[in-house]
Amino acid sequence: MSAVTIRPYEPRDRPALLALFAGAAEGSPSASLWGHTPSEADIYLLPYADSAAATLLLADDGGRLVGYLAGCADPSTFPSEEERLAAAVRRYRLLLRPRAVAFFARATWDVLRARLRRQPTARDLADARWPAHLHLNVLPEHRGQGVAADLVRAWLDQLRRAGSPGCYLQTIAENPRARAFFAKMGFVEHGPATPLVPGSRWQGRPTHQVTMVQSLMDRPAGTT
Ligand SMILES: CC(C)(COP(=O)(O)OP(=O)(O)OC[C@H]1O[C@@H](n2cnc3c(N)ncnc32)[C@H](O)[C@@H]1OP(=O)(O)O)[C@@H](O)C(=O)NCCC(=O)NCCS
Image 1 (spheres, helix red, strand yellow):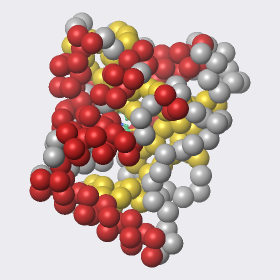
Image 2: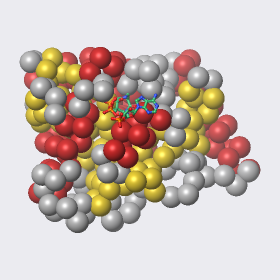
Image 3: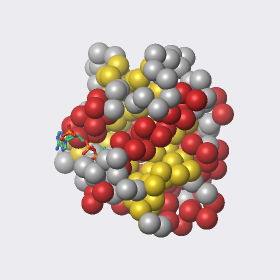
Image 4: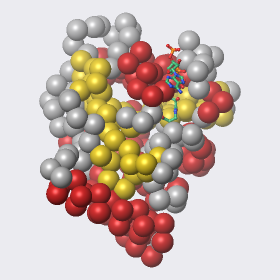
């Protein structure tokens, strides 16, 4: 247990949350896609604040946000990644930004090459056993202190109370710390393949997706 408070997002948190988003994934393979934080936040963070505010959990250290868990209990109420990406491309004119264009060109090339080789590429999990999902990031100086575990416990308790059958997450295979952390929190890796994440590179090399799942029907709330 950390001394940090876990609480739901409120509209007044928006500026601090955006600042947190810019640094909370630092050092991990998912830290940045095309190096433009506002558009990446529009796709991967702000839809949670706008469509699922009660399940956007914040780690608050005496008024300073140090981590967040963006959770979604019911994907049918949430805009798809394609819709969110298309909106961000229009809003931020990403096709006029060289780094974004380079990312999309690389992603297209990755998809074509994977198809030619009959290899899978990353995709969302759509399985009624694990309908809920999460994204989690904690500032570097607050890692290894139980903050991430507190966020995950709060989220899983919330899901159990709501009667959700299970939760999944997707992380990067080349992120051993995240894989070890989620395994410690009761998630198990799902599926035989680690498909390529189109466009993504970490330390100059392609990255791959790992899906992890946890069923919630077998344990009551408060027992994670
Ligand atoms: C992933 C993350 C949320 C985990 O939180 P954390 O506070 O760092 O997690 P913990 O330190 O409690 O647990 C990590 C486990 O991995 C282990 N670990 C630490 N560094 C590691 C490394 N480089 N390689 C493998 N395992 C590692 C730790 O030993 C620990 O296990 P233990 O408690 O049994 O010793 C946090 O590191 C983070 O925000 N990282 C950046 C963003 C990210 O990767 N998000 C997840 C993407 S889905």
